[in-house]
Image (cartoon, rainbow, N blue to C red; front, side, top):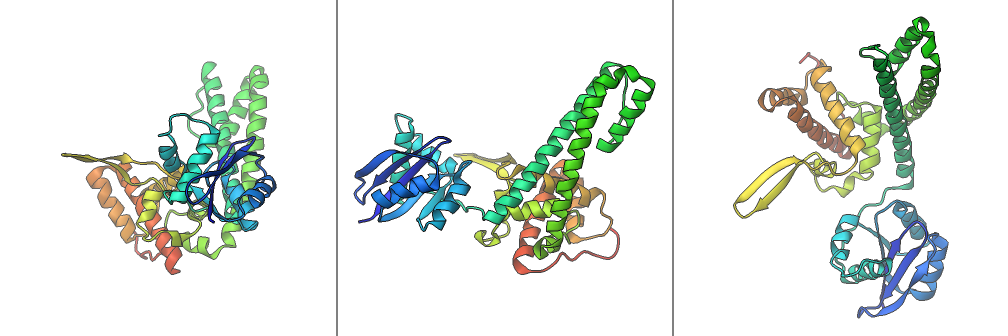
Length: 341
């Protein structure tokens, strides 16, 4: 007799529902969130489990790997798809959600997502931690600029290092402001130091990965963008076509079609925000900084003239994602031209 299990996972407990082939409830209850606690109940109540499903969430990656290591047939479902199904129920509760997930597993009406590897999860954690420190430093820089404007001092343009030097020079002539600016300056210096550590760590990872090295042959693509792309895609074989990567990263237009109405809107912005941002920045570098010519650059320059710089950069970013996936799958490198564009 086959059994189907639905797990609704929260931060404190897991609601579990087990159904048989006919959809009869064999068990309903709550267990802890630890894999050992869940495994104990599964071995006792669902020895013949055909599918064990739960939605994507903060704990889903960790829990999937832990239960998979214990030889359970776990499947991670797309939360948006699962929510569309569960939202049709009259009453919203963890118990009902677990039963709904179990019914989806029994009927086979679900969309499975690809769970990232453990190594990939670690890389994503490093990238996310670095991005958060960069965000904090940017907010701190903006705060210090605002404080300067409040006393009539305009600092002008400049990065983190240049801003600190400008404020330090201001304090020479205005020592009474030291109590205000010394703490944020020290905090900025600390953030910069930690960001540099992450940069060195990521650069070492990039140098030791042949795939990342090949991706970096694309003009405009640096270690950060290449590593972020690898961490997000994880397994290139899960895409039937390289052109699917653009949609996965949210770089393709939304479409609305109903009756006689059929139009494309703005890009969907689905998927990883950091990779999408990095690819857009890489496209900007290709079109404005890179001097070496290539078919990709010429195509982008033509788009700038036809549809404007912003839309062209988005299109080039999408094309870059396709090129990166192709390079990854066929083992080649980007072929640029020797002559300037």
